[in-house]
Amino acid sequence: MKTTGLKTLAAGLLLTLGLTGIASCSANASASTAGTTAAAGAGEPANTKVVYRTLDEIKASGTVNIGVFSDKNPFGYVDENGEYQGYDVYFAERIGKDLGVNINYVSTEAASRVEYLETGKVDIVLANFTVTEERAQKVDFALPYMNVALGVVSPDSRIIKSLDEIGADDQVIVISGTTAETYLAANNPDIKLQKYDTYANAKNAFENGSGVAWANDNTEVIAFALQNKGYTVGIPELGSQDTIAPAVSKGNETLLNWLNDEIRALGSENFFHADYEATLVDTYGLDYENSLVVEGGVTK
Image (cartoon, rainbow, N blue to C red; front, side):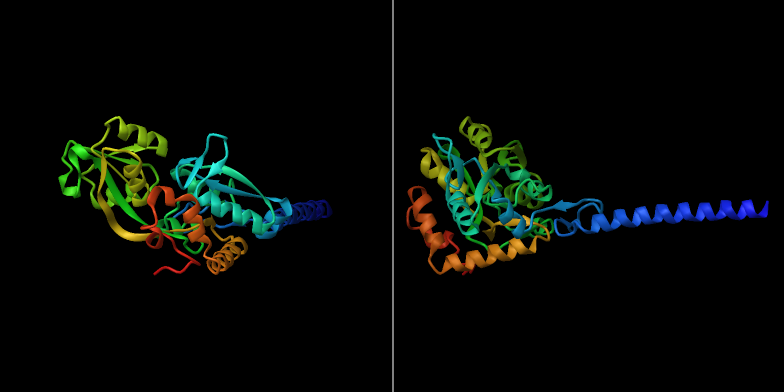
């Protein structure tokens, strides 16, 4: 009886050790994916994973996935031939060339930019992405390539020159996930916001008289006023001066370092001024070039 009991105990110990070994192997297997999986950034749930491809993995695949806007002319849009165009796309094309890979453009909306990086849907976001502290907790920004502030455009019939002129029953159009939405919600919570997911829908609503004003990046509202008669940018700068930069998944250091080196190298050839003159000059003219362009990642 004692011998049988000892055999039973021994068998139980072996089973326990076997299960522990399996769990250990499973943990080691998970650890082996650390090159493509990073822990959640600050402010995210502890069980959130941020999946990304390293620089070598992107090169080996032969394709880089870049998130851009498809409806934000002149920064990222699809032309009449179905081709992506714009300031961000011009930059993306050079990235693909210098990486030696093809580009898979992924159309993104403002509110999806962080999510697309967190889920590995894109490797890089080049979608007029303003650098903020909140976003930097979830994604890694490379060096900037453009300056930006917020602006407010309104019809000539009632030009809004101060947020104080917006009444209690008035509504201001914003795009979900943009710095305009964040700024107004934090600093002017009494202002009613009319939110849209896409730039196209926001523009259509504004043109159809929905909202007394449209708050967005000043580059966007200035372009809108220049291209559409009957509108004026009454508030050309709202809040602080910010920058626009490429973003990668949190922890993707190899791709981030490559992008920073690329931006510095492109600065030596005045690449972003050439980009401006190829894609933005028809909209803004030459007067805005030096104030908007950041060359080589160095802000003034």
